Image (cartoon, rainbow, N blue to C red):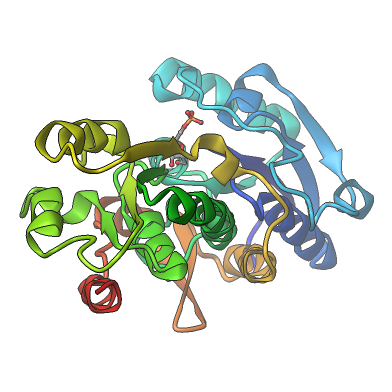
Length: 326
Ligand code: F6P
């Protein structure tokens, strides 16, 4: 057993449905194991401004079903500087916090990795992002809920697309990853997904049209992953309108609707398992690891691996989409 007595918890970066379930799980599992818990508000910013409160089991009651994060979140520029991180360290010492659980995406874990190595401070990360772009876990907290939100929205757009016999480009989030677009396309029976992972290999739009896109259909839906690499839905729609004026094209950008809402059962269970595992990891003396779940097994993924390794897209899913969209 380590020297840890008090664990601080924060959420940082883009919020994701299931973050509250994770906060609840970390808090309750920590208290169950005899630790004190402190909630840090507004991500790393809270470590600089000192927005920190003791958390008891009641602080996390009735939140498992809520989207967003009760701890608030921020993208903190100051924490990116050595001076900012020194202030954060001093705050932790003052508050008597001797380990951190941070919940967030790539940027959050990058900050954690730098801070942990600078100050030799124990940190465990939980993958909380709708983008699903962290290596070492099959899915991230929030991804499944966002996928379901996309599915609901696209199903609705399909009604109007069919009635008007239109071609829709629907832009989804994901930063530079195509997981939401590709799996969203499969879940909605969309005709194609345009994703950054293969944008540099082929002109996906050209391929789509060459392959007889919309030959046998009176409407089509293409999910486009937001990214400078794909160019985004607007750009593709403009291209089609110019090169193939016979198509009646429309664009929908789903935007931040994808980040909200009550988490699905999958995300609540994932967050609960990962939150409890974060405390087990600290008790076992693990440091500077992200909790992942692969093939239903908890794994400890060193920050370096989680952040640096590109999580590959499953190429078989692309084939499946092609086969099913004839
Ligand atoms: O990382 C989550 C995410 O929603 C990305 O999919 C998106 O590119 C980005 O955050 C948007 O960030 P913001 O809410 O700061 O505009």
